Image 1 (tube, one colour):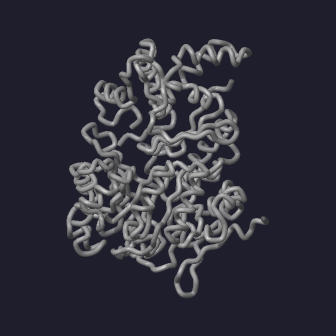
Image 2 (cartoon, rainbow over the protein chains, first blue to last red):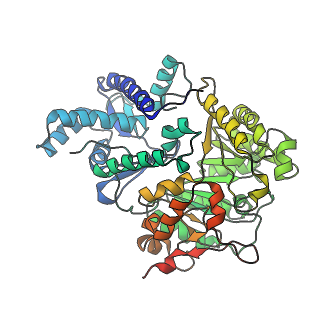
Image 3 (cartoon, rainbow over the protein chains, first blue to last red):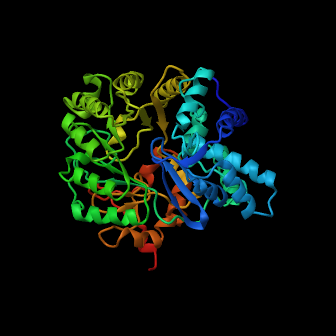
Length: 149
Length: 362
């Protein structure tokens, strides 16, 4: 029975992130609109944080103020570009590339925890859920448990 | 703008499941690693000093039970004066005002209360989700339909064997048939079901069969953990080697691509070691209103019959794991065997609570 070291676990996790990001990018480039998954329980909490719970898988997250802001901006109307423009305007002292990088990471985190779903466009109601991508990845990797197992 | 940070609280299982043989609670290296991680989160402002309210609250509606399992950690059935329907509704109101996400109706056997469905409906109407745990004896097709109608999120059924013989010797005659029929009724009504398996020396070898059976029945999860030595569990302890065998099985099955059911092995000590790192986000309520930071420790922080939960929350329940008594318990407890050393028992053999709120100057 192979037991992973912490280093191996981190590497494994990074590989998942990269693979996942590339899948997410395909969706992002298709001009999708991120919006909150309606089954999620969330609330604004002390010190500008947001707490969100996915009651289906029991995963609880506290979002720091910057991630919380991005999450709150995902209203189903703004595209990722709209959110990026808003952040660039709101944080003029921060390098645009840093904001773009942070935003991409935020999308990965929010989407991979199923806090967000993606809509193919504002007009089209065709939705993409994390489970669709899990299933696709699981099929490629030969695992029924998906990337978080 | 700092890097967006995610804080996995309940997601720990994803991180430590591969260290299953090395108990987190006994492993200083892992605890130190966790401390470093938490410091990083604090640096990124991902952990506020306190929360505006709890996130999830288990409520023991009763310690009455129609079974008498020898290892029950609350030693049910026990008759104690219970909160009335009105008192529980006031509690639910208060928790809703604190923006609590969800409740678990626990016991004893919670469905034994006549007002169970009324309370379920009330909590859902206040915007909270509700799970429940049950031995399944009252969950018929009709009852499962009512649970569905009233909006239950999921139900955990106790199944301690894959056959009548194994299950019934621990939980009582015909209890296996009731439990399995309950699972079937819930699945039929599209209510997510999890199976709780109490590992004892009498049934632990049967765990893999229970997993297979649960999967065939359509359950979503199976969970077991180290048997907790409160209540009457002392005579049933499995050997460490037995735990190792099922942990091997779980590790193997987690990597089995054909497995659909999720299998978890829990450590009842983990929350006691981890919660001091965080602002408090949970507590449980006993049938007579005591507020417990941990269901396994006989420390309380007041009683909702005396004051509303909101007052206790603001007066120290929100930082209860920074209380010196709780910190001491967190330091001293390494395994579930240590609960017995800390919990106080009266001359009559009954547990009683040390009320930590008495230490607080209001």
